[in-house]
Image 1 (cartoon, rainbow, N blue to C red):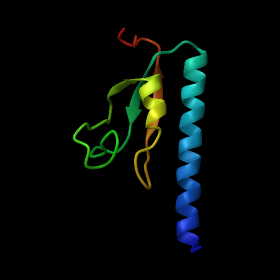
Image 2: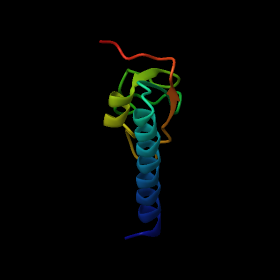
Image 3: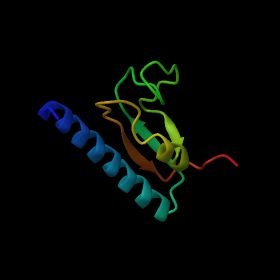
Length: 87
């Protein structure tokens, strides 16, 4: 495996693990919503997704389903205790 491919895989795994930890802590604290930090052109499920996410508010459950969305994804979540999930 080329070093570049290994480094990209390791970075992707670390990003997903970091986001999982953030979301788990939010869930345990009773926080229902998070704010998304990602590239300005990044979509929720891929770059081509028209649902652009930078600065958007999502439920913890939705964020857990899309902890990252593409190779070299720089997504992060900020817990928002002031956001109540619908329903």
